[in-house]
Structure formats: C-alpha cells, structure tokens
Image (cartoon, rainbow, N blue to C red; front, side):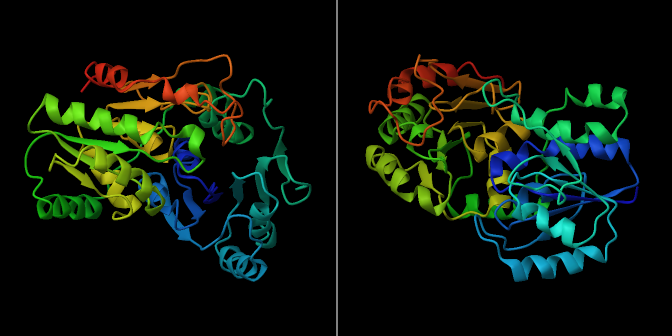
Length: 346
C-alpha cells in the first residue's frame, strides 16, 4: 500500500484523538504516505503529527454540502491514486469526496445513509456505554492490520510535535509582551460546545488571582479563539490589579497555541480542544468537566488531572443545564483547582 487518505473530523479535540490511528497505520504500512484532507480549522493538528506526509487544506464548512468544491477536490485527489481512505466524520457529505475520487477502499462507521459511499463499514459503538473517542477512531484500523499490531496499538495515546516556525513566533510574541522570566500558566476559559462545558469566568478570575499572589514571577496567558473574548474580559476585570496576566484570545494561530502550550508550566482548561492539545504535548494540566464524560473524552496524559463532581445529573451532554443550576461547574471551587494544581507532576 503506498497511499492512505484520512478525511479529518471537524473539531480540534477529535482531530487530536485521531493521532493514534495515524501512528498505528504508519507502523503497519511504514512505506505508505498518509495524507489528511482537513479544514483550515483543524489542519494545524495534522501538521503537528509526524506520521502525516501532506495536509490538504480545504474550506469545507460545517453542515454545508459545497457540491462544486467537493467535485474539484475529488478530481485532485483522484490523481493521487490512494488505495484506501478513512472517513472519520459520520456525515454523508464527508464520504462524497473519496467516493467521487474512486478510492477503492473507503472505511468508516455506518451513518446518514452512507451505504455504497462507505464500502467497509463498522457499526457505531453503543451510545450508552461509549468507548473513549481515541479507541473509536483506532478501531477503524482493525480490519486492515494484523491482530497483534492492533492489540499493541490500543495502548497508544495522542502525541503532537511543536513546529519550529510556530515556536519562534511565540517566543517573539512573548518578548514583545515583556514575558522574559517566570513560569507561564495558560488558562483556556472557552469551550466551543456551550455553557455546560465552561467553568464560570468568576472562578477562573479567582484562580488567576491565587496564581498571581502565590508566586510574584508567575505569568498568566489567556488562550482561546475570538469567540472567547467576552469570557476573557470578565476574567481581566477580576485581575486588573495584576500586570502579569495577558489576553491572547483571538490573537494566536492554532500552530502558535500548540507551541505556547508546549512551553508552559501548566494548563488549566475546560473539556475542550486545547485540553486535548495539552495532553498530547504532555504538558501538566487541570481539566475541568461539567456536562461531559471524562470516561469518553479524557485528557490522555499521565500529567493530567481531571476535576469532575460526578453529580447524579451528569454527564447530561446538554449544551444548556436542563435543571437550571449548573452545579456540576459552579460547585467546583477555585480553591480546589488551585490545590490540585500544586500537586501536578512537572
């Protein structure tokens, strides 16, 4: 086999959790080029994967058919003569390009009437007793690899690399911000999914104050997308007396975010894409869970500690608290997170 194509998922965290699949395929087919078709949103994750030969970026938008663009991409991909394609999203539109490109073997989970578009399909895992996402993606390789190789690959955890260009860029930004000494703590207050994954901004603000007061040289950087600006502004209001807290939300590329997380002392985040990046970089981290299930999407790192209250009403997997109290997050106090932070393995 000399050519493998991966159709990437649309979320950063999911993209990180596909890396063990790539590693498994590379071990089984060391001479094969593994290329990834990804949106610009998740493409940086695959640039940070050493197994990937080429990242094919395409502006494929969520819930949009974009038939003309998909036909153009299929024509381009057809010329590469891939033998197999792993279609990681469950949508029917994600299976169109490899089908149009006449890739002989198209592997994926059953979903959205994809019969024929996917010609080697696996049953979706039970929604009640769901395996960790990394295992769900890894299982797609099972039909194409030796049994012994698969059993060994189950133990793999995501691993990302920091690009040297991104590292240089971040070091320049740190210098411009006069961050030249002290430990850097990265706070990621956002979560794209919704409010039930976001620890309250006031709690983040109190935690930031504790970190600033505990060690005079500590530097805090708020990290996230432009959509997290409202959250960061609330945190900054609580910490305005400190000059060592810096708002980088919306001002970094994902490549730079990966580099910054890789050089930080620790990361404090919700269950988000940046949480999974920190785990894949083996950066010490605190992961705060509310409505989601840490058994399904845990930070896969021995340097990560999860804080989850395991209330009877969680995990509910809802975007808004159905009971209206959000106790699963509100009742996780800053003092608990700060105390746990001090136990992290550096």
